[in-house]
Image (spheres, rainbow, N blue to C red):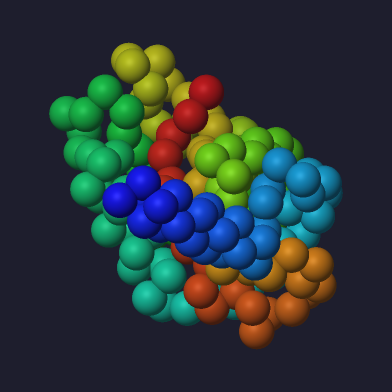
Length: 154
């Protein structure tokens, strides 16, 4: 019994290390390069990727005026703003091993965060399907990258 447990644990550890070896670890990638990946993603994301983003953003309540965090502009403007964030992010913050939050502050109010008007938008992206070392302009690798969430932020 003990031997089976250790064998199963060893196999699980091996699987997890192999899986993570084929994923882009955002904390080890320079912010400049993460920004370049985002520019390529913005130009090449599929309609499905955008739909996933809007579904998650809607589900989180960011288009609901009654929510403590919500957009004050309509969906068409938010779409343009998300493209702006991915193309011009002034800040990128890696988190959860393969994810990154891209942030850009616009000149006009775009949302409310806890009753405070904000001009910044944050977009979360999961890069786990992008192989490490991928060229930043390789559009063919962007199809499985996940656009996770768009939200007003401080």
